[in-house]
Amino acid sequence: MMASACILIILILIIILMASRIQGMARVVNYAGLVRGKTRRIIKLEDAGMPPDEMIPDVDRYIKGLRFGSEVLDLVSLDDKAFQVKMEELDAYFDTLKQEIDLVLQVGYENTNIIQKSETFFSLCDVATGKHMHKESQHA
Image (cartoon, rainbow, N blue to C red; front, side, top):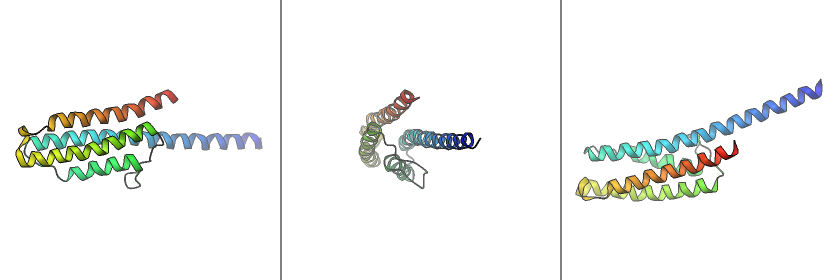
């Protein structure tokens, strides 16, 4: 009876740890989606002549949280090298996109490559999330 109780307790703890890990991974995927969605909104607002300056730091925070983890955002840093490489690329390309957003403010929307650069950024978001989702589905 005592051995059965110990085994049951161990199994419950394992289930709790697994649920916590899955929740952490789900939060990562959600924030990756927020990066993409909020960036799309930034581009649309720029096109409408309504600069969304307060949203840009949010995206920076989300990307940093996805790379390094964040207590504030309740994000874990995933130990997935391919995902982290893609997050690093995403971080670097967001800097390029921010420069293009600044250029829009200076010379106008039509005189920039904002559409092309934002589409490249969205593709990087898709690949980063897709790489993570594909790897997780292989483990299931």
